[in-house]
Image 1 (spheres, rainbow, N blue to C red):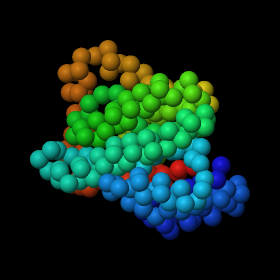
Image 2 (image 1 turned 45 degrees about the horizontal axis):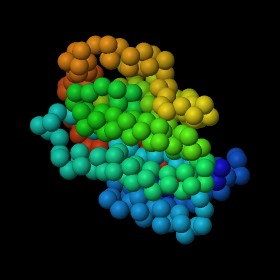
Image 3 (image 1 turned 90 degrees about the horizontal axis):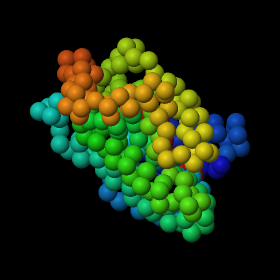
Length: 251
């Protein structure tokens, strides 16, 4: 597929575009845009419309994470996170999906998280935003599947990116098992081919999603406290964009 790459840092997208063209002959159109602004979705779609192309696959993988106590968290940072994780993802989905349904083919991959299946202390707003993504995607999947369009919620667990270091949990990857971004992508595309509504990319994480459903909600949320309890991380409460979230691919 040829791609439309949308993110803030044009330099990184240019490097990616050059690599993709060299290795695969993929042509990329780059849109330098802050996807956390309220009108980002409309601006991006306007830019795509100028190209005169139809979106066959939309991958909403832009997202930020924020870990910290409520008393030390800036509400403005929370709002910025929700604008990106929830508002822009929803806006793009609703702007692109009608065209796919009219054509009778197309797909959307919305990146959620294994955190979507339970409340997570010290990153409550982030986990809630990913739960929203999961539920929205499943609802859109149910509406669209009979019309040739698939909407998939991708729910990875710990993945080898910078996410935890800059979100406020440095060294997290050294203490926990993780998966590569390449594995997450393969799992996502396989699930998409099977027209599934969601996929958890690691079998251990999938078992955990089942266990939290069997446990009481009180137990599940209290258990989550031990993962990101303050004191196990550096004093940083800044939102963190994962490397892949800085290069959301809309193709």
